[in-house]
Every structure is written in structure tokens, then in C-alpha cells.
Length: 161
Image (tube, rainbow, N blue to C red; front, side):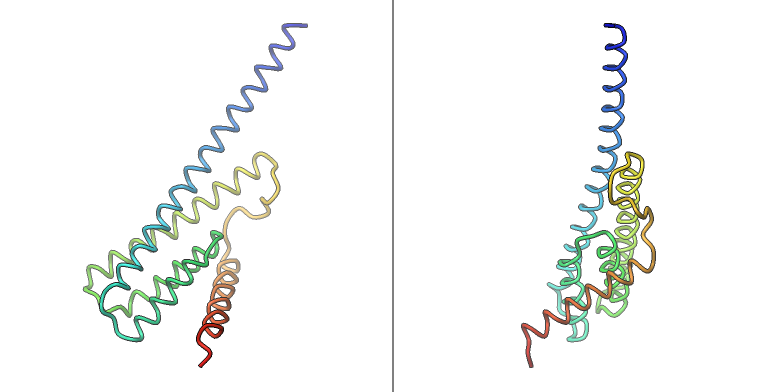
């Protein structure tokens, strides 16, 4: 009887240990994604602080608002891709543009890895919300559309002219 209870207890502790290790991988991936996201926002802010043409200032403002409103990984990827597309028009030295591009590409990859780690964890432990593991282009396009719609709705609300 005691031997059986020890086996059950050992099995339960082993499962909890494996669960905790998996959970720490997910939290590490999410922490890396959060840090990369903060670096991307700071990069946008540093570019905003410099002198820019009106067109570039508008793209920077839109990039900043999209990054602020991005909460899910598909939205963050869409905002980072928008910023990546806008970088080409900035009035900056070529090496700074390349550094911003590298940062944006790195952020997009980190967001993909963090999302995959989170979904694999949910799938492995049969938790709800693991319907898709990889982020599809349709999800990113829908997130971009949602972010742009919210941006224009808020822009018109605060700038009625």
C-alpha cells in the first residue's frame, strides 16, 4: 500500500516537474519577445525624436500607434512588418536603416518563436486555445487590417478635419 502511494506520488511530482520546465520555456520565450518588442518601440521613438519629413513623420506616428495597440503575436508581427516597410522612406543614414531593418526582422522571428512555444505548450498539455500552432499569413493580414481600422477610427475621432 505504501509502496503504491510512493509510486503515485513520484509520478505526480515528475509530471509537475516536466510541466514546470515546459512552462518556464514558454515564459522565457514570451519574455524574450517582450524585450524585443520594447527594443522595437524604443527604436521607433528614437527615430521620432529626430528631424523627419512630414510623410516620414506620418509613417512613424502610424507605426508607433500600431505598435502600442498590438497585443497578440499576430498583431505584433503585423505592426513590425508595417514598420519594416516604412523604414525604407526614413531620412536616415543607410547603416541606421539597416540596423532598424535587422531589429524588425529579429522581432518578427522572436514573435513567431514565442507564439509557437506557447501553442505547443497548450497542445502538449491539452489546454484550451491551441487551435493553431504557427501563425498564418491570413492571421497576420487580419491583424494588420484590424490595427489599421482601429488607427483610422481613432485618428478620425481625435482629428475630425
